[in-house]
Structure formats: C-alpha cells, structure tokens
Length: 104
Image 1 (spheres, one colour):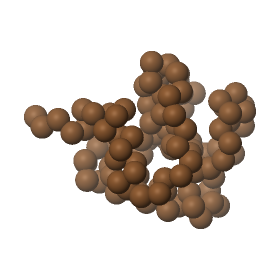
Image 2 (tube, helix red, strand yellow):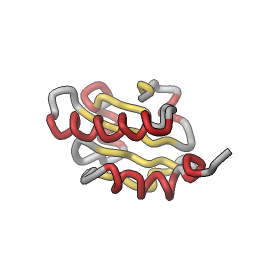
Image 3 (tube, one colour):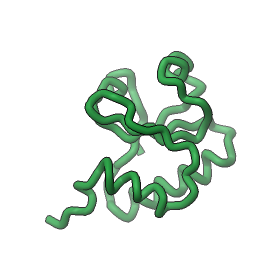
Image 4 (cartoon, one colour):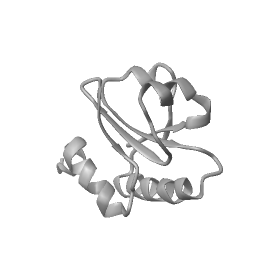
C-alpha cells in the first residue's frame, strides 16, 4: 500500500484505506487488502492513518474505521465500512478498478 500525502489526496481517482493503528478490525481489513495487492502484484490502495488527518475525516464525513473510501472523478463515490471478505472488496474493484481484470 502507498502512504497518502497531501498531494495524493488531491488525485481525482483513488482507493483510500483509512485506519487507526490500534484498531483490531483495521488489522484484519489491512490483511485483506494486502492479499489482494499480492495477488495482483501491484499497489492498488493508498493508506491513511485517520489520527493524522482529522480535518479530512471531518470534511469527508468518515464515520468510523476501517473505511475504504472510493474516489472517482474527484468525488467520493462510496465509503465501505464493512469489509466482510476479500470477495466483497473484489466487487468494488470490479466496478471502480476494472483495469485489474483485463489481460494484457
């Protein structure tokens, strides 16, 4: 996963994993996302420690962690709070990052 910076927060399109360091559920969610990245052998997600970006959390109405914030066309399309399973996350990837599933 790529660590977020103020510059990358301004990107029009991103999958942003928001967590806090001592959250157990966040650790489980991170493991799912890391497994997906390992399968595809590329960085897919950005990560943000919510504790370091309180203004971003407030301005974007992020209600809890873990959260997978999906931004496209410079707008927040979805906030996923219930990761549930790797298969569930793939459902979002198929919609918002279909290029992962195109064979070269």
